[in-house]
Every structure is written in structure tokens, then in C-alpha cells.
Image (cartoon, rainbow, N blue to C red; front, side, top):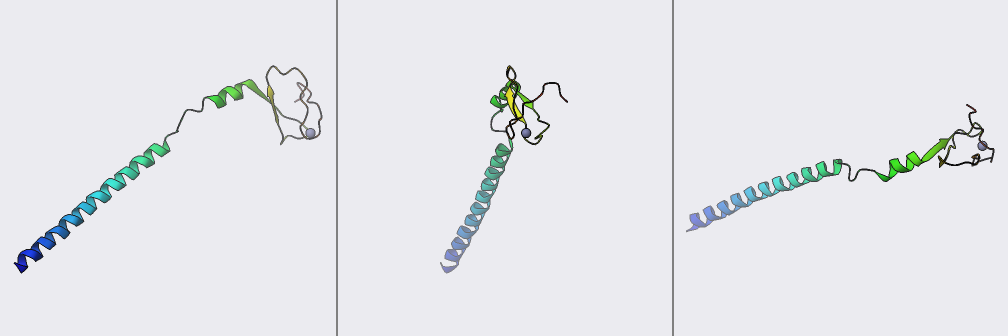
Length: 92
Ligand SMILES: [Zn+2]
């Protein structure tokens, strides 16, 4: 009786350990799946290229580090955001 109880207890612990191991395996598999999903780009960035295509970049000689983005059909001469100096077209 005592031996049977001990054997049953040992068996329960053994099964419990196996279940724990397999559960950990499932957890790590799920983690791997999540990691792969995260590495994918969530959505194709469609709006951004459209916006860039509509805008023209204007570099100013006075402040090259502060380029201005204007619409391509912009007719007025763009002015520097920092000092207000107008951009001279074709001056490169
Ligand atoms: Zn400037």
C-alpha cells in the first residue's frame, strides 16, 4: 500500500513534469510566432509616398539645414523659414 502510494505520487510528479515541459514548449513556440509577426511591416506605408510626390524640397543657400517642402504647383517664390530670404529658382 505504502509502495503503491509512493509509486503513484512519483508517477504524478513525472506526468506533471512532462506537462510542464510541453507547456513551456508551447509557450516558446507562441513567442517565436509573435516575434516573426512583429518583424513584418504592419501595413504598407501608402499615404507617405503620395505626400512626398506632391511636395518639392527647396534648399536654401542661407540655411541649408532647414529645407522647405512646398507643393509642386507652388507659384510664389518660397522664402527661407529662418531669415525669410526668397529662394532664387535655378540658382545652384
Ligand atoms: Zn535663411
